Length: 86
Image (cartoon, rainbow, N blue to C red; front, side):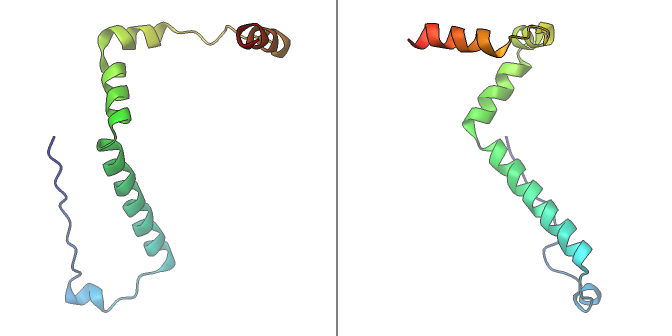
């Protein structure tokens, strides 16, 4: 995978004379943070493996059929935990 960044890193003479507003700085900081997070995710092996697993048709089918209606009360969970770790 090849990632290239296309950005104008040097402001033009017209833009250099303007002082960025607080909102503009906040947005710029948010964009930089998002870029950093995306680059970090792209180079993270655990994230790559997770993406491969969920993009696999068999795995994604299993995820789609998982249901969230199997609610367990606290006492049952605590008892099961004690049985397995006791």
